[in-house]
Image (tube, rainbow, N blue to C red; front, side, top):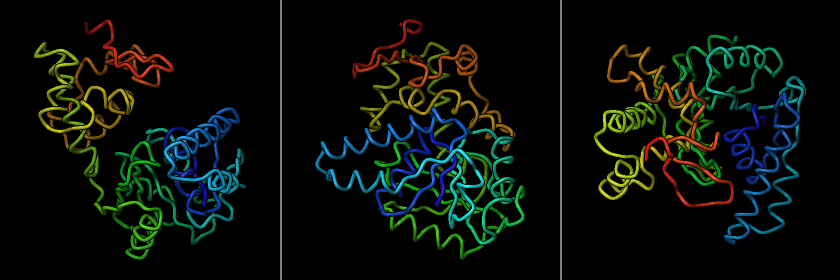
Length: 292
């Protein structure tokens, strides 16, 4: 199989497939990003060794199953399954799927790890919409068990059944949903995150107070503002825009504070600051100075 994109989601997907014995071509057009992706996989495997969930032998076998590729045609020309894990941008995804359709075998399944973009629309960029499906893994992929399996309008039952069984073989729990904006996970999650940001924006409570209420009152392992930082505020904004445009309902309109933070490049963990400040090597959660 092939994974397109070696970022957080792409390297996590490659890790899981490689650990389960699949040969993986991990593609990224950036050699630097590819190397960083493999380093991340190696570090995450070390964490599993430290937790005694795998052995050093399994780590080495996993890494041997993953091959770096910076030529898209080479990466996909023999792949039975291709999972796209590029940035959450519709134009970029449609361009990638046009290329995947051109370079991969006609019977290959083309999957997208999109968290909100229409699988039907992605499938329309190919000559095989019946073989296009969503495989929305959760972050961090090696840890989180859910795979949201999204049927496009034309996705065949045989393809859905194949992906469901494959997800189970990976030790994941597949949930099949249909192709509407945000699917299930983000249709429910993003309005909650957006409402938490509105609560901060309107002065209802501070960052820590909002997150503490949701952690202790609703038994969430992570507060919505910390979770937004973890996901990436730019990604949250992109998903909310898809929901807002798709449903035309004001309840999905992104909070102005979120828009301003993305414009200011305060994107959360990936930029070092969002609602919290992040220092490499520190596990202490510190509210950003802007919100103290």
